[in-house]
Length: 315
Image (cartoon, rainbow, N blue to C red; front, top):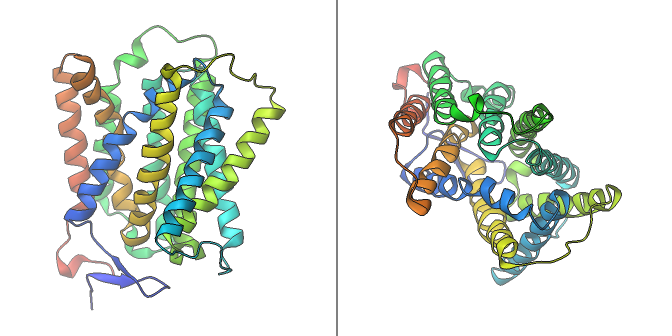
């Protein structure tokens, strides 16, 4: 007998479909993340990549602790999630090391395409954790259609002159970041972190990444910023408060309560939202290419998330 929801180990409901609340939260996250690569690229002009990533993780971790204390949440109580938390934190740190270092060698537009291979990693791995999350052929086609829309939106970035002789390295680091992002999501669903508070799951990742990336920055000999101006501090503040603290907390709550394969498909809207931000904030033209890409991504996401008839749902 099919049900509309399952229960997490902690006794909280996990839904088997994406409802209106989830769609609204996912659209908000994707719109915010659409500005993330640009903010990181701008901040690189004054703050080295590993140092920048460590700073935003540290700042967000402090905000998260204050937020949790204000709500009376017990983040430091032993609950058997330590090993899984260290694994998730290590994957998180490596993911952003790849992305931030990769942005030195490739363009933000190319990076935006490569890191959104992550939904495919989740789609391949989740059936090993929860059989009900295996995509059928129509859903898989939808995922490919959505990704095709992203590639189409950024196609000019692949035919334009190379960003440099080591552009391939930046692209490869983008793919590595996608793999690590997908593995982080699978860790959140396939270990005891799946029953932990979203705040605790996020704190593991922020604390481990702040320490690991800070140490990596020292080992790599990254220079201390010669000057800090609003040109880098404001984008760093945006990354810390809005992206790393607020939006990631919402994302981990979504991963805990909704099918990972279905919500991961929504992340393919992020690079398209990035282009739309250029239209709205920078006065860039709204091209037919962007319109077609947006339609393709939305159609693909709809196919991934369309509710199957009751008799076709996997048991």
